[in-house]
Image (spheres, rainbow, N blue to C red):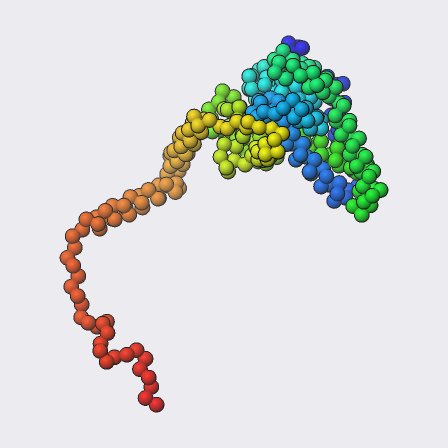
Length: 355
Ligand SMILES: [Zn+2]
Ligand SMILES: [Zn+2]
């Protein structure tokens, strides 16, 4: 089916229209602190599932787990309403193989912003999963089942939220929420935000930010996207080296997905988190060094009179020369001056008054 040209399939648009339309339910159900915080918490818990499970496990196998653990992770991933883990992994591996060339399903450079953000999912050619390219995952029938019936987990998840809302309505009326609020906030609003947050990686992470590694695509590192997507914003790092569990290569490249996976590894559910190899870290250090030299050269070349370097360098050179001259100077020793400031016997400060 990937041989077909890209074409919007309107039937595939219905779930997206329903998802977005459901958000307008807020006009009738209103808001409460409980419902809003549920939506926020479910955004981050499920963003972790997209990044830590669908991306860093199913797509790249950056850590290990048991078969039961894998099934639990697949169920968690299913609540994100981003189809099955196998569909997700197949399309993501395809993206890495064809990044920013015409075959890439969602390149903003080839297809434009909106197609890479949302359009590509509505195309008939991107609907099927090619199991032949993900044999490592397709050998598990339970994963294939979850992938084939990918509406089951989302439907159960929505139902569970509705039920939880009903329970709170009955047993904790003080929280001021109800079944419809939990459905609208916990499912529709949170899932719509989650969809757009995730899609920012497809549409923005090849447009916005800095390139550390000279990869064959146009992937970039962005702090803002790292916050929205729990560490996935370090996309250029990731395109350079896909097999490590962490996408942020330094402590200041914050990567909450990695921290979460580290905590999960302490529980025994997952293990074997893969580090960034030393050779890649050395390459990163060289790239950063070259980038800082190039930036300094650009700064001094464009506006030499405004460049802070142009001011600092002569001053630093003058200080260095002066220091060296002073150290070598063989000046005559100062003769001792008159004993003006020496203590004179018999004199005391603040003599006691004679009165
Ligand atoms: Zn990419
Ligand atoms: Zn990836």
